[in-house]
Image (tube, rainbow, N blue to C red; front, top):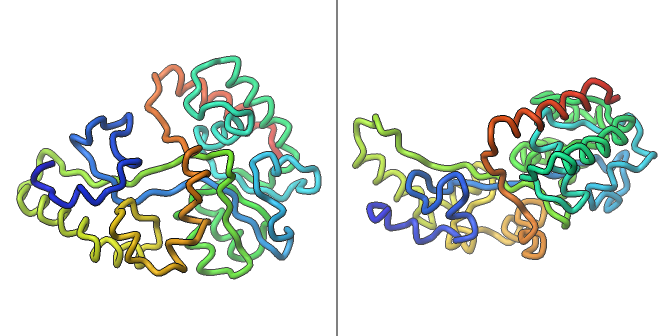
Length: 250
C-alpha cells in the first residue's frame, strides 16, 4: 500500500475488515447500510425508527423486502440484539421464527423491482440498501430512509487490482487519484454514495455530510456490523431458514 499514498485519507473504521485484514488486497471506495425506506403519503414521518416497527400490525401487506438471506435474517437478529454473523443455530431459528411473525406485513420479497414500486408510490415501506435508497429519494420527494439506531449491516464497495492487470503502475496511479480528497468528494457528490475518505467528507456540503440518512450519527455507526464470510454449511443454514420464511410470507 506504500504505492498508494492517499490511503491515509481513509477513515480507519472502514479498514482492516475480516475479509481483508491489513487491507493487503482492497481499499474502501464507498460504503453504505441496510435500512428502511418509507413513503410519507402512507406512513407518518418519524413513525418508523427501529427494526421492530416493521412488525406493527398496521403495516399489514405493506412491506417490500429485498431478496437477501443475510440481510433479512440479519435485521431480525439485530432486532433481538444478536450479531448479524451469529453462528448459533438456536439464535438463527429464533430469528427465523420472528420473521415468520412479520410475514403478514410483507407485500413482496423482490430485488430491483423494489425501486420501481417505491418510486411509483405503489408500496409504503421497503427494506433496502442505502445506495438504492439514494436513487429512490432522488426520484420521489415523499420517500425517506432510516438506519435504525440499534444497528444494521455496513457494506463496503472496494477497489482492487486484478493480479492479471497489464498496467499495474497505471492502476496504482488511478486509485491514488481517486483517493485524493477533492476527487473523492466530487465522485461522492456525483454517485451519491457515502465516502470513507475523511478529508473528502469535510469538503462535502452540509446538505450531504450532515444527512443522517446516509451519514448516520456516531452513536448509530457504533452499532453497524460488517458481514463475515461464514463457513459454507452455516451460509446454507441462513439460506435454508430464509427460504422457509419466503415460502410462507405474505
